[in-house]
Image 1 (cartoon, one colour):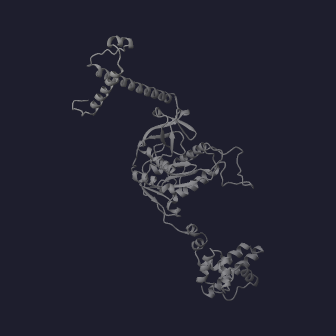
Image 2 (cartoon, rainbow, N blue to C red):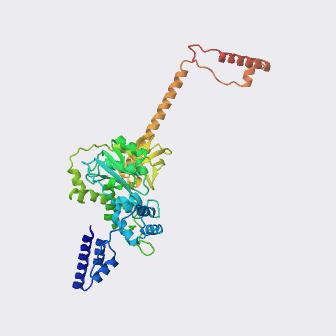
Image 3 (cartoon, one colour):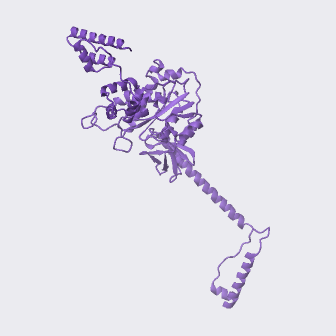
Length: 493
């Protein structure tokens, strides 16, 4: 802009401020700041022009940053005051306000943010291309998120923050899989992936996705998780580090969970607190983990089936899912049992398997007391566990306190059936032993094995000669040794 044009703009600003004073009797400070920012001058200079009713005759050229100025900005991590002091020590006579305006004018917000906070801060000012999946089950985004609420885990007295692992369908925004736990691990990811593939209670949102997009967290990039994804036929696509925009839909879902669900519950940790840091809330302790899970699953049901979504033109995820004719590649639940990674080894006791403060039992566990088996489970589902033996699925066990009369009767029938099976096997073994004994004695002549006394032997044979007995004993031993050393004939047994 030329000097004449700058001067004309300054006169227009001064005239507008003077007119405001005549109409209102004063000039609001907001109007002074507004024009000072537009004219790129200080508030003090603008006040001076208004009092004189005339702006400066010559418009000063704006200060242009030098390479040294830019280097100082990066050297001091975006601290303008520190950069100005360093430049002043080097002989630069520009004022701090002028240097600050030059930084704001000639450096982009992304450049200034990068100098202060690095790549993560720069991402806030970067534009991205929007990506939408072509159809349902094309891409499923997954992510971990620590939920800002305190709950009491099973078997604990101290409350902790739970973690959520969500699998979100890119095209329909439907939550296909969800796992809630206190500490996320591979089992959590696999449990969420299992729910992602299986349909829900309404028979919806199932099927194997073509792609799985998640970050580089150790739980997601673990070999076991990758192997399961490849076996299912899904392509795992880990995103670049510090790039949450590459899975922005599930990141936005995490914010929705906090804003619409978590913030309305007691012991929301980001809510208002007292001066001592304690949260405002009920006098009773935080809710237990299972109660929180039940409330969360009910909200997910509402989110998938009833909540309109702005990105879906006001439709719900269910309406978007049902309106998509893309075929679904399904897989049976029996083939998915191995998806829940063996999290614990448990020994079978007389009353069943003890797991997470509950006792689980199934008819198939009879006869395995003392054996250590693998237990696979969904982290937040305590209603059932899958039991594996020697690498193969054995049974699904349920807590004893929820068994009905039919289930208890099945356990008793299995126990009685096992007892009869073992008894029958023992009776068959006894019969085989009797048959072998009778076959070995059937062709041999009977012999009188009656033991005679000393007096009867003297009458039959006369006096006993000890020397004769010793000679007979030695001869018998030599004959027995020769028989042992002799080679066996073909007919010998």
